[in-house]
Amino acid sequence: AQSVAQPEDQVNVAEGNPLTVKCTYSVSGNPYLFWYVQYPNRGLQFLLKYITGDNLVKGSYGFEAEFNKSQTSFHLKKPSALVSDSALYFCAVRDFHGGATNKLIFGTGTLLAVQP
Amino acid sequence: DAGVIQSPRHEVTEMGQEVTLRCKPISGHDYLFWYRQTMMRGLELLIYFNNNVPIDDSGMPEDRFSAKMPNASFSTLKIQPSEPRDSAVYFCASSSQGGGRGYNEQFFGPGTRLTVL
Image (tube, rainbow over all chains, first blue to last red; front, side, top):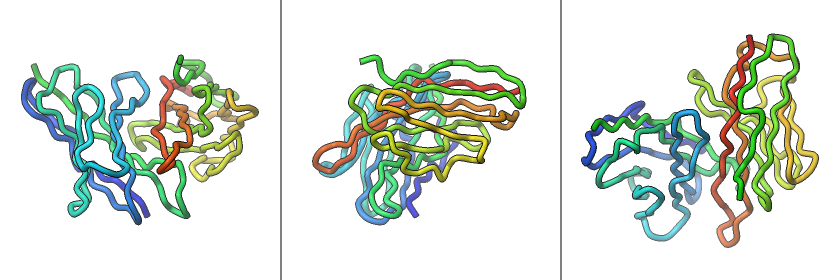
């Protein structure tokens, strides 16, 4: 069965420092991977996706993610964190159970707290 | 584009009452998803539609929950009768069938915060 894991419930980082939010996946076949961000009292917003091609994917707000097939990881990164990046981040993988579907399987979320 | 529109944004009701949540997807999108988010269970997919047809409702918790999509621009999620444990934020999302590899990201609405007393 397809799944994603976000091993950290919370990540704390100082403003200006690089940040990493971790995600690992388990899929049969080629993974379609996504990152979403949720600000307080808002819906999820799409950040970036990996379907195929370059392992380094660039997205919105200066975020990027690196697809690593050997480690089955898709970590979200940003070179310099901003206080405004503080939010809940979700990793997701497309569900291929029973054939390709348009379902996404979401991780449990990682709360990013950026201290000024 | 106005994005995915959900109404109401907040709903407070008493146990046993019927609740109807509404969603208008992005024009041209042919997939519509209903999710529920709680602190305890995180984000759960309840049901999704393709071209107005329900494809997978395995996440619908009980017979008290039902969803319809009478046309491409409107969907409802109904809870009858409602219970306190149904209190959650309910999100609607839509996406389009992409070309090539055939998958595009989902766009989420702002959610409906439901409180059942």
